[in-house]
Length: 303
Image: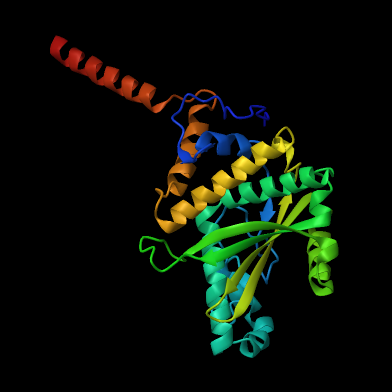
């Protein structure tokens, strides 16, 4: 695929661009994703070990323990013999029920605002590398990213479930992590590192209702440089984009900004289709159909 080298000007398409927030448009997102490749993401099937795709449907979760996930009903049935004892030990209690409910909320939040969340996290990694004056190739090895979430206030009545918003992004040095967290981070990277570029981050949700802080770690595997598109940006440009993306996501979550997620995906799909070799735009197709109808009508009159 040809890499787009435009900076602020988007893809150069004549199509109407959808505005997520000031400075963040669907054309800019598309120009990023033309250079972005994340082949693996999320959980893996407990039976066949197939990894959940980055932008596909979520795997099925076991309703008993909600720890294991499966790519299909067939895999879930095949794994039940091995999973049964674990599932019974980790079955729902009052405490674990709250944990599982929170995990569902975190996964729903991510699903609603991808790809904007992924864009923002990669921008923050790139900005942190600039702040520390280290190479972008090294930052995923030395740091992880915490995406701190918060509840949307009750007085905002138009907010969308799961009523979460982004509070801030916090880069965390691996050297400053607890031993347990560091081991988990290194093991996660080790499993995927041989296959490409790995970027790790964690959703962190302080739940005051339960008096606990929940976390959900993610690993993205890229077959090529995940920061290619940001290498030309200076620190101010990166910071602006991060702020704009945060405002856009939080605005949609609160219901104060139109939810453009589906429209953005539709725009990217349609825009990509128009520029394929040999395809016609919708306006050209309409014009062609109209001309054919006129010709048929004319032939009938002549007959």
